Length: 313
Ligand SMILES: C[S@@+](CC[C@H](N)C(=O)[O-])C[C@H]1O[C@@H](n2cnc3c(N)ncnc32)[C@H](O)[C@@H]1O
Image (cartoon, rainbow, N blue to C red; front, side, top):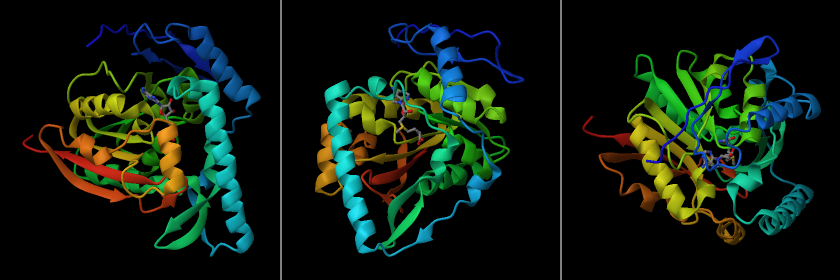
């Protein structure tokens, strides 16, 4: 493993809170050590993006069943067309580099209120996009329920939405998360500022983790490996496996399987990894507890949830 430098940014004050961020990325990372840039991202996220802190009501955001009318179907086509243009634009601007794509993207817990078309039990539904994460979070919950003081790690925690919800589901569980870019960790910090998880965030690269073997009970990812391409995704999966004690949960799109023609084109263009199931076959002492298409079909990112348990522990 490469030598990694761990830096604690001393006492950044955010409202009344103080927090530390550890740097576990390699010195080659383009943002490495530029802590002023992190401060600027936090300021920007808070002041200029108008981030609102978590509102108690978001958990109550409901999905409504709606057989899509002809115009909402047209809306989905329109959505597909917009997505198509966005994919093309992203590739011509950034190539398939994840770092570049996420460099300036901020998300607030408000995104949970965005309505998206979903397919569930062969019916069309309209729901907030958090609904699609419940498969993953419930799988993590199942792992943790039988443990005394579980420690959970989210790889690529993005804007902190999964951590936030998991904290609601498992209040006694210690939940940690890491991100790859300042912009994402900034939105995560802002979104989690009122929770104990603020103390549990750090910067790292899932492909090469400077963490002890089996240091967390469960490690999970939600739409992170997808973007790494096959080779790096393989490495990332091995790393997640290494640092987990009980097992891992991944919810990731996979080109093999349920994707339609457009989704397949999109995933190939964006360099997504190809075959999730094939990748896990080389993990040692691994039992596949679950491998199923995500219950909620979210276009254009149809995914699988895979739950892997360590055997002989
Ligand atoms: C589609 S977002 C998903 C975010 C979050 N998991 C969620 O479900 O909301 C993918 C995230 O993976 C992160 N990511 C990409 N490459 C990474 C890497 N090598 N190590 C850690 N995180 C990475 C990105 O910064 C981004 O926040």
